[in-house]
Amino acid sequence: MKSDRMLRREWLAGTGAALATLTASAKAGAVLDQTQTPTPQASSPEEEADRIRRMKWWHEARFGMFIHWGLYSVLGRHEWVMEDEGIPVSEYELLAKRFQPKPNAARAWAKLAKETGQKYMVMTTKHHEGFCNFETKLTNYCAPKQAAGRDLVREYVEAARAEGLRVGFYYSLMDWHHPDGARCAKDEEARKRFIEYTHGLIHELLNNYGKIDSLWYDVAWPLDAAGWESERMNKMVFQLQPDIIVNNRNRLPGDFSTPEQVIVAERGGRSWESCMTLNDSWGYQQADDNWKSPKTVVRNLITCSRDAGNYLLNVGPKPDGSIPEESVRIFKEVGQWMAHNGETIYTAEPCRVRRSNYANFTRKGNTLYMHIYFWPGDTAALAGLMTGVRSARMFATGQKVAFEQDRFRVRFTGLPAEAPDHPVTTIAIECESEPTQDTDFVRRERPRNGV
Image (cartoon, rainbow, N blue to C red; front, top):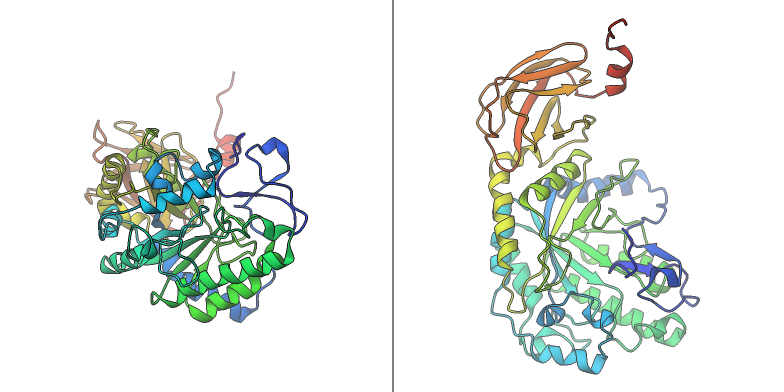
């Protein structure tokens, strides 16, 4: 979605040396949404088989935690505060003297992710502000050499592994702090220096922490794929981490697409992951109280799973590393639902049943899961199901559900007056074949009374 203020993962259209100045107004120039996927080149059967192998765990996981944490957390006014408020580099970098999180804050993140039913985590190793949360030999602008005094990425990696979660690294290509971060667009020597710095940081990240499961590039401003030398970048990544998966935000197609703040399924079977905030901010914003309800989160997760996508849901820890209380409450409520209904989400297959005024759907094989978010009372009905129903049951309890079916609809009857599960109740429907839906058939063929 567009607004007058440029979203944090957008960059101006154009090529390396011919870019306009980045602006906060979408009216000032053509804006290309970074969630758009570059046209993928045909891959060989061997390459495609390797991608399927590497992506297997990710497709089964469906649900992950995004963590945005950095110097912007100290100010508590959104992760774009440096740019949106025009804070000078010399003023902003003083925040590194105030960023002193409590030890091992990531342990609470990982425990919450596991309790929520999430299977992987992705943490900001370096955001647009240029501050590195990890140990590096390439700059002093990093957590171990500033007030924090330790490697925050290592603490995160160890915490995630301790809970059995997959480990992902976010890395912003755009850098507001590095002296070559903008002039690299017009100065070739600056570009060469900045590329070696960028590739060097990524090399350290993927060489110093053991096996890493995913790499999440962000904002490629101000260069194109050639300027970033993205082919060489990815080649290095896969040499260091043969099992890793990468996204599409270094201006190459990568392994998966990344729709942001919207749920948009890719066509042609391409993998995709919708990333969303829990309120309106990625980084900690103290005054932002526009929280998504647990029901909204569950509905979004169901929609992603229905279309074979993943849902990466964000938290923005406070400067001390603690997660805002409202975030914890929402995640825990979602976790309670996932504890009983997670099997309808993990490893879900593409579902061709979609139409209802009060329910959404996921599928595994011939089993259709009807997720009712607006409880209709005694009877729930589904139009245009183009296969026979063998049985139905309440998924969370296993209790049988009575049903009746004709050519045009199936009705589930004798349901309790109030929804038995919160915030969404699921009915498991065993079908004779893969369930599909055709409501146009109902419109055309249903008998109509004479007048």
